[in-house]
Image 1: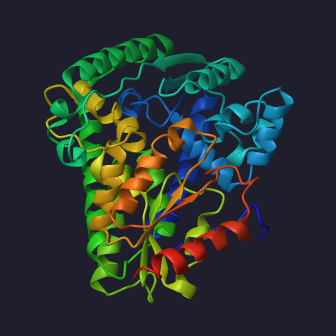
Image 2: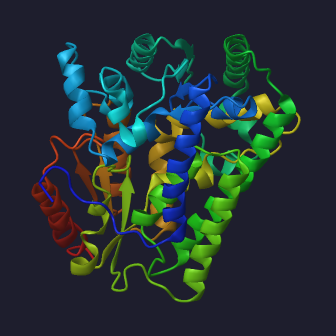
Length: 430
């Protein structure tokens, strides 16, 4: 293990292994479909993929692909190509990985034989860079580019996570939803023209129902982990077991996997299984996954009894995606699912109040917060998140690092920072 690359995590859950195996199998099937002439869409994570699912348009999600490339240690190669083209190679790595990879003259050497050539690229205009990254990405592949407008809230609701499933019209404001629905209609028209495939509302209703079922299992899992001490699993298992199926949401496979995932964890709890038998400290990881070094989450278990038991990936599924009462107007309910993603992830007090609620619910002793300074969205609000948690008596360590780019990662320095945080801030206060 060198000081940059870190290590893979040791996984114990069947659900994690099954998710990893399925995504490889699914990706090969996707490549076969594209090779036969089917349209292929490349989407940012906050694009309403349920529309593509309902229209049977195969797609890959930008941040999922970046995580795969990072895990496969492709980032230095891809950003080397980006720098050769005259671009900076030290900003927006999470969102620009695929764009950087589009300059690779040997596409087939990418993960699992490389990304198929997209025919469509869609993003939401959630930051100043996002639209340009996708526009240039689409240009490199000769794909049709479609941007979706973004809006911001004018209210700061109390406990949005309690309102979101049923009171989403009130939570997200009628004016925002009106615009978002029109944006969805525009996207549908664009896709029908580009692909010659027709939108089917009945299929969207099915996708919405399957998504609710999947996310309900994630809620059960999140709640079960929160009340079980020591925890039956850590995020070394749950991150991949959730993130990969999340991009398959709206399918029977994703529901079945979520159900099996819940039942596996329930069985562990019933049998008294402890992921970290000497658990003394429960840690929360705020921010994106450390995709090139998921083993980092397990380094502190044996020596300190410090277990990372919370990440946003499972909690987002539990609180952010379920939308009830969708049958009357599925497009509006779908709009209420995706327009708030930037609110609860990047905008105080939406995000800091949620993180604090989750920390209390899970009995968190300390927070490690990944803050990539090359991403404005991720940095914005970091002061308020840290202050809110610290004011509530929960110590926070900010790690300044990128979730996919290992080139500036120093394993020894980062490990020492967490160890000092545990011994001085957490153990010193317990």
